[in-house]
Amino acid sequence: MTLDGVMEDPGGGEKGGHGGLSRQFFNDEAGKYKFDELLASDALLLGRVTYEGFAKAWPAYKDEAGFADRMNNLPKYVVSTTMTKAEWNNSKVIKGNVAQEVSRLKEQSGQAILVAGSAKLVHALRQHDLVDEYRLLVHPIVVGGGKRLFDDTGAATALKLVSTQTFSTGLMALHYAPERNATK
Image (cartoon, rainbow, N blue to C red; front, side, top):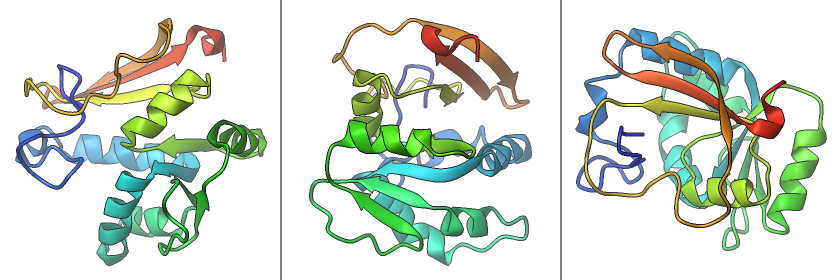
């Protein structure tokens, strides 16, 4: 996301991405951070729009480190009221009660469930108190407009800073937990 809270570049790049605006801040350090984050997860939870973009792109990617293989092989859950079938490898559609289904997923043993993008889904999870940690990758740029991660709906959520990491490009990883999770 950008410093002003925008999670997409309204004028460039692929839908849902920052296009060229954020690439200047992404380097090997940030790549390692994202790979470590992916390795610490054993499932992806995505909204339909993010899922469709990922499902179109990721199967064609190959890399020596194995990031693409991990993305393609992880269990993926896509929340959608309109999709009937998810074609991307190891994917399942959640159509029913999202809060109930995500609560069931969280009860399973294993590592973290990673949500990428998916603003509407994050809003719904936040409203049902289902977010355990916000892991924000903040780009040092202000774009002035576009889709924001946090909208005007729902009650205020007090957060506690869990950790920070600053990259040489000025990019920052900020980890916050809702106060209820601050001692975990």
